[in-house]
Image (tube, rainbow, N blue to C red):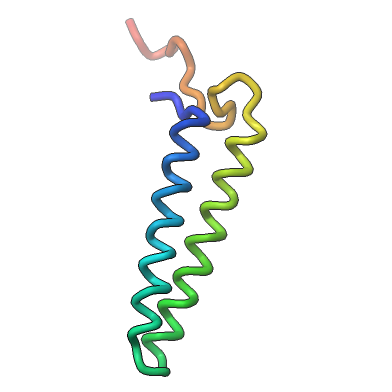
Amino acid sequence: MDITKDTLLRKADALLAEARRARKLSAAQAPGADRDQLMRDAVELESRAARLEKDAASAKNGVFAGLQRPASSPFRS
């Protein structure tokens, strides 16, 4: 399965939604380790989403070249 710009952007949107949920949950937590971990998780998710968005923006032909599956395999008969 080829990875397209659309696929990357959908994954980025899903990660951003998870980050929003983590931030919302952290607001309901008392200050402490759990709240801090939720905030770190949100930052990490946002960072991963930003990388996916950057990869999608840099793809030139709609298929992400770094993850494109070869058309034929030398192992097929």
